[in-house]
Image: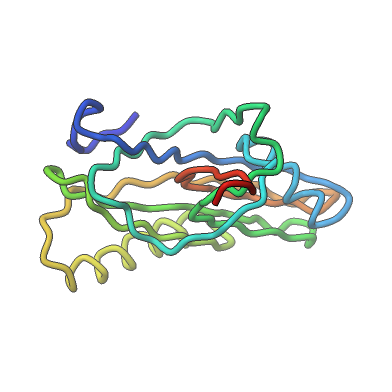
Length: 171
């Protein structure tokens, strides 16, 4: 699903997985947990990062598959999420990114809002402004966006760029 001309897999020692999920529950935190489960990242302790893609990276879109032995590990992510308990309100979350075709260096932004259009526009405007201040030939804007509407119980939507996990021993 990646449409930009990032370096090939052979050139990329580092893969960043972009995963998304939404869900509902009796409380906002339960809804957030359901969205984490849908994205495949519920059994980690999330460590949020800023928005830089290291050189030599390849960004792929797919549900993240957690190895069973990583339960409770730290997971380094860039995370966009939003929750609501207001009946009839929608929540949308999205990540947008650009990468330099030759090096794989890139920028990532996390945006949330109450409509898909708000998130799309936020991604476009943010990345356009960020690219101007860097001397790098970035490719086209890529994005992953998800949303849901609150009907009876709280809902949550999230998109995460998963960088890597680490255990708690041997640091």
